[in-house]
Length: 466
Image (cartoon, rainbow, N blue to C red; front, side):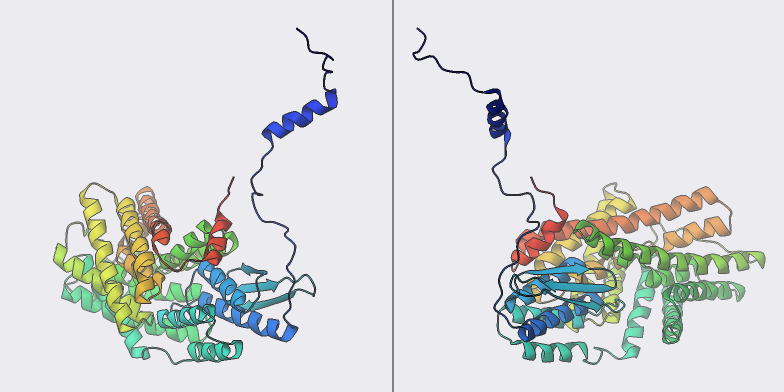
């Protein structure tokens, strides 16, 4: 029976409202944008001092090799330790800007230019330890400034001769990894020491890094040509390849991949362009000398080093490469030993993956994932920068000989397709190493203690949530 009084139909205007209620979301906004600034009771002098300290710490970390994400999280953490909880941080390749927004006062903004990045693991660990002490509230602003002054102005960890020995050790061990004997290893070490000294002199004269790379690559290739002219019984291509590894800008590719994945596209593009520019310098230097040698009628050749090295020798040499690289980058003795272990782990993992049928890019990528994971999980407990394990560990896997193979095929043998394919394969290995390290760090991050809301805030920059 019909109800009484009869129900009246809803007005047409209310039907869209009911339909919208059925599909409207109730969860928080997709991103915290445009939030109102919080009130601040800090006076301008105290805020300026705390902001300046956070800015100095961030710029120092970027200058000695930290990623943009780690530097940003550290700046936010240091600023919050002194009550600056509404800060925004913007990092580019050459500068870092921090802005403190206050509801009841004019916002404070400061910018600092970042000097050219140079890996220095001891200094990086010192800045990181200072930031950790500030985060626990153990230091006031002035004392923290003094401690930071001591860290950034401290003498280098090793004498110049020791770091030169480290670079020479990288080249010598790499010659062994490629199947060379003691002659190739010795000549590679001497050549690299000469290249390092020449590039140091050119750097003092403010020559742009591109031309330094050209000079270094040309010198390494020129030594191989001279050995050929003197009819020295060595495999000259190994000498060139070892020198190329020291010059390769592929290590910066790791930082570029990290910044791109972590939501810092401007910094990532700048780092990637620097990689391309410096690698182009190597190409120009090698190609120029090879062209001159070909015109002089010298019988140049590149040997095949596949299956030329025993497992034991290659494993020990890989550990020597990584340890020598860490030594050249001013790592402490304990960190050098850890880097050597990382190099051995990387080479053995790549060797095992290759034995299962993986190609060079995939095998290198798998090894890089393992390194990134171990670096993220273990180094926090050992008080060693995570970058040390990843960066030093992948050095034995850098495609130095592949770059020389490709350029040789193009310049000397006029086989453009084969040379281009070889160079593309070398680039694929470099990208696989960079992506693998970044993926390994992301996989290991949940297992590492000490992460806080500032780390999560930075990591969310690269995420799109529903």
